[in-house]
Image 1 (cartoon, rainbow, N blue to C red):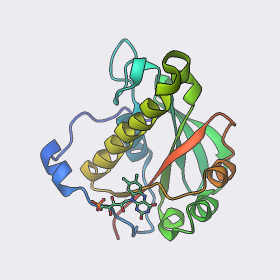
Image 2: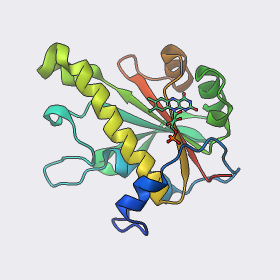
Image 3: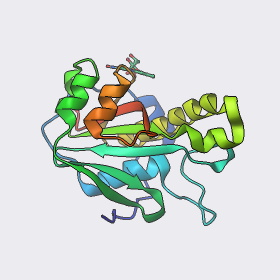
Length: 190
Ligand SMILES: Cc1cc2nc3c(=O)[nH]c(=O)nc-3n(C[C@H](O)[C@H](O)[C@H](O)COP(=O)(O)O)c2cc1C
């Protein structure tokens, strides 16, 4: 599924966006549009150069992160090269994801949960033992871009680190080498 081209002109400055940041844990029952989801995906891992470099930095440009979008309808995986979503799994995985996240209810209520997973091996091939540190730094970069983009879109978001890794992987039927590192719940602030 092709996503709409991302906007490069926000209505709010970077500085005001940073100042406005606050975790939001209560969401209105209103779905996000494909434009909004595409914009969040682009902010995290969109391709921003003819050489294939992306919106957030990556050690050795090896790009170990995989981004999943969990909505009421399905779980999608973002494909940066196409700026598109690939259908990963049909159905609503948000309840199972919320249970995996120690029952944090806003994960089930949010119209969108973004799960950032990592394939450590992509970075380990070059950087060996150092690679785990690099991948963890990278998930912070991509996560921060998502959070700030959410604010710039007038949306609310909360980063979630408290979850059982295996239960998240099961809820989303992740491939064995895609290890979940971060959940970001996004929606209209209630
Ligand atoms: C790595 C990380 C993990 C977090 N995990 C959770 C979480 O599981 N549940 C939650 O409600 N908030 C979580 N938060 C959000 C923090 O509670 C929040 O950022 C902090 O209270 C500061 O508030 P602010 O984000 O509004 O500035 C997490 C934040 C980070 C950076």
